[in-house]
Image 1: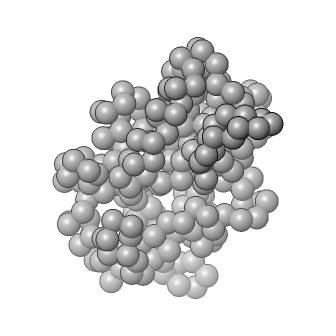
Image 2: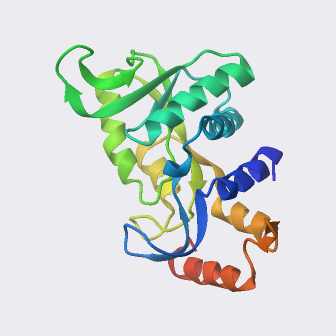
Length: 225
């Protein structure tokens, strides 16, 4: 596993973004883990988060793109932080763009924040986590309605690796199949479990045998076979 992925997993734990216990998800599923990207709240956390996204974007898509698009609301700070990090780490100035939930009819009008999209732009979409793919269902038509752009791909922070709406593939695979662009994550839940199982953080094992059994049981029911 790449060094930046190991560091990102530790970063999620220390930032209290990735939690373990018992959580009821929006889908109604009872999950032994939960990820809340809204818990990144400080300047230093956002700077580091932007760097991890930038490294993952570079690993999967290189620098062959013009715009980072972050869907409202959580994608807005993600796209800003990642755009800054791409500039700092790789020396390329790219633009950030996000959508508004409602069209603005005065001043800076329209549905977009940040850069406007132009014909020929190559776009990478950046999100926190995708469980069902519903957000892309809303975001993709908005992007395509603004200009004749090429979506190079999607990057999320964590691939939960759960079956999506089809009941056969994970959400990221469904997105690839449905929209025709690659979908990747900084880390997968499989990598998280592999790295944290038996590992201590602040004097306590993060994933012990009991929690590992609960995670395995969860994926037996909801994971991609």
